[in-house]
Every structure is written in C-alpha cells, then in structure tokens.
Length: 149
Image 1 (tube, helix red, strand yellow):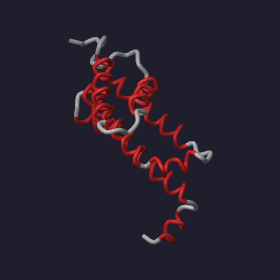
Image 2 (cartoon, rainbow, N blue to C red; image 1 turned 30 degrees about the vertical axis):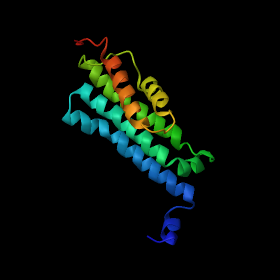
Image 3 (cartoon, rainbow, N blue to C red; image 1 turned 180 degrees about the vertical axis):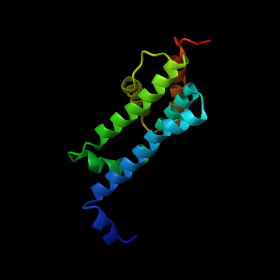
C-alpha cells in the first residue's frame, strides 16, 4: 500500500498507529470467550494472563510509535485498560463461580498487578521472568478458592 493510501484513511501517522493498537487490543480482549470454549475457567484465565504479558512485550517493541499517541489527548490507553479489566472480570467471575479462582479480586486490581510485572525494563530475560512471576500470581488467585486443593 502506498503512503497516499494510508493518508486517505488516516489523517496522521498517530491515527494509523492508534488504529493498529486498537485492533490489537480488540483481538486480545476477544480471547477470553475463545479460551473459555476450549479450556476450564482457571486455565483460560492463566492463558489470558500470559497473553497480556505477551501483549506488553509487543507493546515494548512498539514503544516509539506508541509514544507519539501518548503526546495527544487520545483516550486509547484508558480505553484499552478498561477493555482488558473487563476481559479479566469475565474470566475471574467464571472461575469464581466454578470454585477454582478466588472471588475477591477484580479485573482492575489484577491488571494493575500485571502492570507492575510488565513494567519491568526490557532487559535480557525480561519475558521469561514476567511469565514466571505471572504464574506465581496465578497460583495466588487459586489460593482460597472454594475447590482449592
């Protein structure tokens, strides 16, 4: 596609980056329904948490492009956080109803915890460490569940 074609659809480079990011978030937040169709609720939550870590890793790769959006008044990041928290709420609710996930954690709280994990600097081994810490966090979500071992 030629540059002129992009600018017929998007007024600015930032608008193009914003749309790409929005589509990525939409696809990510559609995953819980698919995961719940294929896996038990707790496993669906675990897999979605790992998808969020992967999303953060990709976001670090797009950091320069995303910085241009941060300088605007775009609500895209607030919208993305809200969508991700709602997706987590869906998984947490189903897991709690099934007795495999504790019922006292909100999607927003869990997203904040993941933000701390994924906010680590992208150093060698970052992704492996983030996955390991996320697995520990997931174990904590199962502790205190009705059907906990």
